[in-house]
Structures are given as structure tokens and as C-alpha cells.
Picture 1: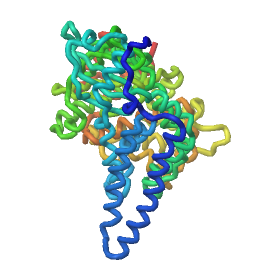
Picture 2: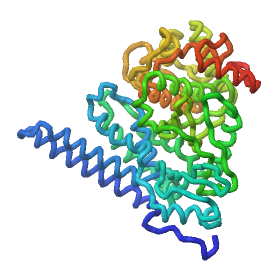
Picture 3: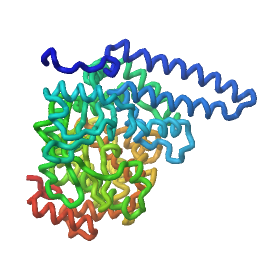
Picture 4: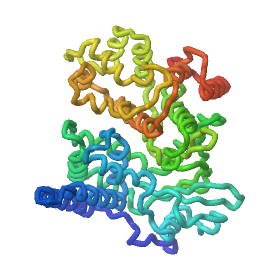
Length: 476
């Protein structure tokens, strides 16, 4: 960068460094512990609402702190807000979850002067040459960067994703700072219902894995292009195109995908929400059948909902291409459970590494676990998604039924961990939409074992056949 390039204002740079990143959250944890004690004393001396008021205030401050921290800390808050661990909304956790949900689409933004400096420094040209017009207020602000609406000199409508200055280094510091991640996870998991037992180190590692690719905007640009090519011409899955001339290390420019936000989508009528749910499901689970390419961070703040039932997917920071053996293993085990073939299922589980040589997991226990995991497909159709669909796996961790016993005996291979994250995230989104869809018909469509019977199914299968895409186990 030449000396005459704009400098990013220091006040707008995300703080980095092990101590500077750790101290605020550690101090917050200490203050929260003290405040909880005081609230408890007040409750016992005549103020029965003291504890609830304390948690409400603390939740608001917690969300604000994570939002300003950006990077790993903010992304972790987003993850905590996604999983519905308390469907009844009756525990302390629900208070914190509601506050954290703002991080999905309403994070504290950087100033436009800072965004302008980043754009001009990264792309090497004045912003007036790059764009005919660009909105000063971001249309979205998240953990790694924020998005501005803009128009190119030729009139093209685009979205410009700008990375927060300093966030990449802050994330590197966070990922190397086991003390910070452990402190965060201890604080976050202390809010989970007491029955839950969580390996904080494993949880911290999962958070880190979800974030590490998102720093590299050039990597994301390649991922966007791969998905755009794969879903070209799809009737209800919309992917932006990358504007390569306006991309750099900290700036990613894509064609603009119109649609309403997640908050608005949840208030739409049921029929439209069902159409969106089908679109999301075909996008997420079609990857098992039509490719090995997965968008590994299902996040409703990254979706744009169309009035025609289509959904636009606008964030591809975390994308994974799995080995064929992983995809094949998932589809093969799914076929076995759908056909009630316990022995075949158990054989596939052993060959895929889910059952170790010294495990005493029985075929019946393995069958019970997969029955729990595939409940929406196996039950009466259409299936209406309820909170239990999003919490079944987590609840099984401390259940004493056969599925719960299996959960504690299974050895989930490392390659499958991210797939579990995808399934959990998608189920949580479908629950929030209150979706009612024919899940079995959709699975049959994508596996090529039956002709489509739903409107979305017919559109999707016609598109896939026209593109010459494989179905189910036939991935060439």
C-alpha cells in the first residue's frame, strides 16, 4: 500500500492481542457472578423480581459486549442464539438467547468513513470511481464485516461486503487464546439448563472451526462462484455472482439479492413460510445428493426471502467439500433407516467409524439413535416442525432411553461433526418458521426413488435433470 492511501481510523479498528481480548469478557464474568449474588439476596429480602431483572440487564450487556468484540466472540454469541435449548422459554437461558439473537443481523457497525478507507485501501481506487452510488448505512453488520448496498457505474446493483479493520488479527489472537475461549464457553454454558453436560474445550474447538475460513474474502469469493455455477438457473435457490473487479483481501462485491429479512420472514403467512422452508431444505440437503459442496454455516441472517417462495443465500464464508466416502456414508445410512434395515444400518455405522471395535453399542441402540435423528422423515407427512425437532440431539445427551444411551456410546468421526452442525442449524431455522412440509417426499425426490409430488419437488427435479445432476448414491 502506498503512503498516500487512506488510513483506517484507529478508533474503528477491532482490538487485538491476548490480554486486550481476554480482560473485558473475564471482567464481565466476574461482575456477573457478583451481581447474581446481590440479586439473590434482594429476592430473599422482598424483591421477587430481582433475579429476573438482573438476568435481563446482564443479557443486554452481554449481547452488546460480544457485538463490539466482533470476530470469534461475536460468532460464538450467534451460535448460542441459534440453538433452542429451552423450547418452553421458561429458563434463564431463554433470556440470554433472545438478547443474543440481535447479533444475527443487528451488530454494531463501523462508520462509513472507516468502511470507505478499507474499500479504497484494498481496491486501490477512490470510491467515486468504483461505484456510482453506495449507501452510507450498512444493510447488515455481522461478526467479520458489514454489507453496503451499491450501484456500479454501469448501473449494476451490488452488495459490498467490507471486513472490519483488525478483525482478522483479532480472530487469529482469539483462536490462539485458549484462556479466552474457555472463559467464554464457561460463561455461555453456565446459562444452559443444569442437565446439560458440555465439554468446554470441544465446544471452543467447534466455534473456532466454524470461523477460521471466514477471514479470507478471496476464498469466500471462490466459494460463491462455485455455488453460483452449481445452482445456475435454479427455480427457487438464488446465489449471487461475484464482481471480480471489485474484490480484494477485505472487500467482496456480489450482485445484489433482494428479499425480506429473517425478522420479517418469521411474521409472514404460513404458506409462504412453508415455501421458504422447502427452499432452504433443498439447498441444505441437496448437497448430500447432488454434490459434495456444503454451506457449513446455516444462519438465517444470511438468507433473503422472496415473495415467490424463493430464498437467496448470500454468505459463503464457511464452505466445505467433503470426501465422497463421507457423503456416501450419510446417504447409505439414511437409506437403511428409511427402509428399517437395522442390520445394514449397523454395518454401515461400523464401516464409517461411528462404532469402534470395542464399543458395546447394539444394532437396536444404533437404530434408536438414527430414528431420533430422522424423525421428521419417518413420521406422518407433511411434518410440522416443533421445538423438539431442534433439541432432540442435544436432549439425548442426558436421556436414559435407547437413543440417549446410543448418544453416549457413539464415536462420531471428525469428518461428520460439521454435518451435525448443519443439521442442527437447519432444523432450528425450520422450527422458527413453524414449517409444515412433506419431508419424506423431498428426500425421495433428491434420492431419485420416486417421482416428485410437491410443487417445489417438481421444480427442483426438473432443474436437476436438465442440468444432468446425479441423485442419491449416484454421484459421479
